[in-house]
Image (cartoon, rainbow, N blue to C red; front, top):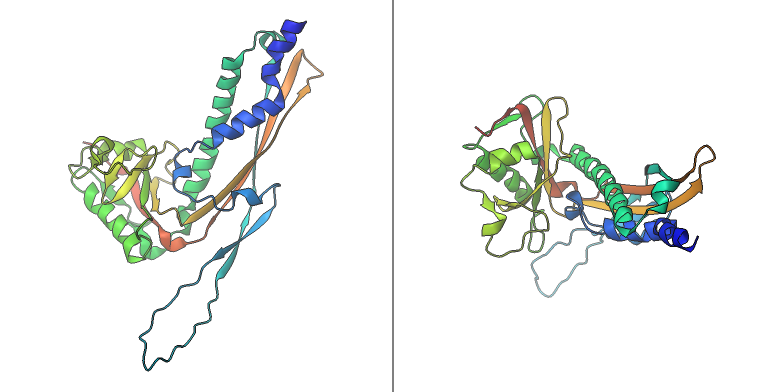
Length: 289
């Protein structure tokens, strides 16, 4: 009986919750591209966090020691925790009796991967917040990528961010692509792989740099209506907050099993649209050949 209790301790919900929270702190792709300045302000679905965006400050020429003071009106926005996801599965008594730390970690890793896919897809959908001025290509005329043209299009993407004053000292721009675009990018002579980036300041998970953009790859950048929406920006653009609300277990009345379920809450807000840019690419117009 004591051995049974010892092995079952690996499935204590509070232990699962603690470990999964720790694992989720390790960033996936889009977690490298957002800020989480308001993370500690949420507790429940529907919570709203007030975000204050500082107002622009102007500089004037001093004449005859006359100084006038501008009235600053910082912008107030609300970040709503409006996304609610769960995972749920059974652990039968036979598996439970044979449980060990490695099995528990494997389950937690799979839960982490599933949550990261949700995060990536949700945040990549923020391409809809990009302004027309910061868009390369169009819905009607998506661009064509190949190894000879890919660099010029990424230069246009980086230029859009610079022209909107999103890039400054300390704000490193990024771009998220998928494996299909990566295959094309790797053939561009202008692409600098992570192994050859001299200053070693690439964000975690970046494969390299092109046109000054840190390049990250996500399999969750999928096609929509025959187009890829490649998202670029700086970490000032999107604020993200999440909370693994709970993990709990209960006895299944219909089998010799325990039921394990977890609740994950999150939300995001594009607080600075000018710090985002996107490229619209036709899926049939991307070739690595």
